Image 1 (tube, rainbow, N blue to C red):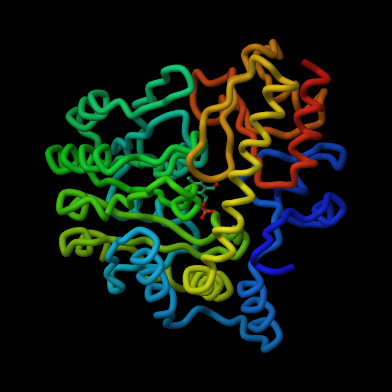
Image 2 (image 1 turned 90 degrees about the vertical axis):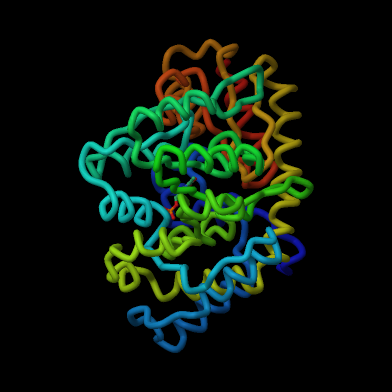
Length: 383
Ligand SMILES: Cc1ncc(COP(=O)(O)O)c(C=O)c1O
């Protein structure tokens, strides 16, 4: 395979995989749930992993300037964002980065604002650290969803300590604009809120759409923000366990200096060097994967329109997770369960992403068109 053709593995190969996507459900279930891609990984990343393994170079992670340097170069080229290499720290994964920030800078009971529907692990990170969750749901109008800035200000004014921003947004594939991010930053300064911007899906922004990192939005953002991100989502390396945490002001660098230094030791050597390779040499693969993903999105929409008329699909600008309103299918109070039990397709229940979204499911389309088509046909057969 060359990097100019990022394609999904065939179903027989996929069924041999050991990851959660292919092991969680029975073998007759077509898994379209967890955020893993079914593509072959980039050759350069595969070579790094093979090379380290062949040389038995699998010890603890030592100094690794390659990670910060590669991210600085990638962020400058891709987004025009000037990252300070000295303010890049390693973490086991993005979830661990968030949890460590909550533990180090928060105390039990502190409020964390989220915007549902949102990536379900956010709720677990908040619960694990005994912080309390405050929801400012996104405002839905038709298939367009937007941030409730007034609601956000009320929540900040009521004493929130953190704002856990999902940017770009999972499951809506939404990329917030510079104007929205600047408005968030102004509120964060006004009410002294720490903004943790989870930008793990950032590199997966579609061609023609601008992704603006939170920390590229001026002094207010720099004073209030911590970006947590990784190559793991965009290059499909979740099992390698490596992520980064980035700040961009002396004040925030001082705040995060209390994070445990052991975060570095708890990061995988393979993950760190694979991430450096992804940021340094992975753009061609990424762009090719995005071409496939954007094509898949259009294909999925046409399949839904043909076989599941009445199901609405939110227009995505990023990543490979689609948010479907399945009300019209009349599948009862737990549509994802019916889809699993009767259609033998795994999708993420909307209810997992927040209260009030029981009539939605999340559908992963980073796979072959055959799998997309087959999954939609199976669902149509029970609807
Ligand atoms: C928004 C978001 N953050 C974090 C993660 C998980 O990242 P990690 O495996 O690095 O904890 C995901 C996984 O899908 C995600 O969608």
